[in-house]
Length: 247
Image (cartoon, rainbow, N blue to C red; front, top):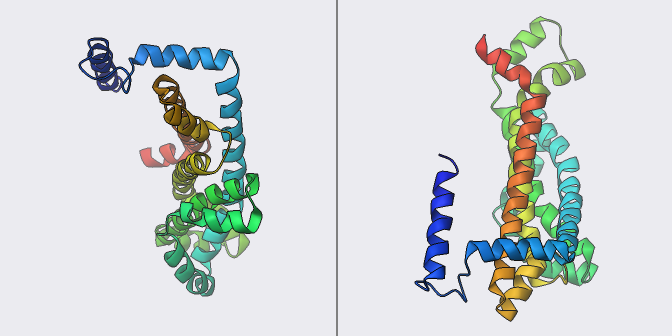
């Protein structure tokens, strides 16, 4: 049932395009898009640009997650840190991070550093906020139980606080990864000369719609695959939660 609706929509699209109910120039048949996808991978163009986007995304995600998770945890357990940092988070978070690109291009120049940093900024704030929420919403009875069993300081953090916050942390990582991909594709669309976003823009300019749709479909597949991968990792690492839920 999950795949039935997309299959029906793609089938309708195919029929309408083949019968010219919609313009094949602007809405080419999905089978043609699929053939272009295979052909462009075979000649190396699509594969090379996909690798560029994945490399940038990996760098941006690591640059965001490595400081964001500790900062969110620290804000959750140390109220003075939260009171100092939270106003800045609240001020910057609603701002579309793509608007930072012109400033980063001025400071860093047109290049990988500006592209990666723009995407990383998009993920950073989401991960911080989700991690903080994971600490703040944990059941206070867990802390009480931990203290009763002699857990204090670092031991309380590693045994109680961090495990309780992990589901929210993984949620933040998934959302952050998606936001980083959105920002990165937008950056590639605007300023880069490589990557999937650049391919979408280039083929749109040339009105090569099958190639444009192929690159667009690959962006969606990339986002779906990576977020599903993180979800599978979460299920594997936090399998103990299911056992606790059955008790």
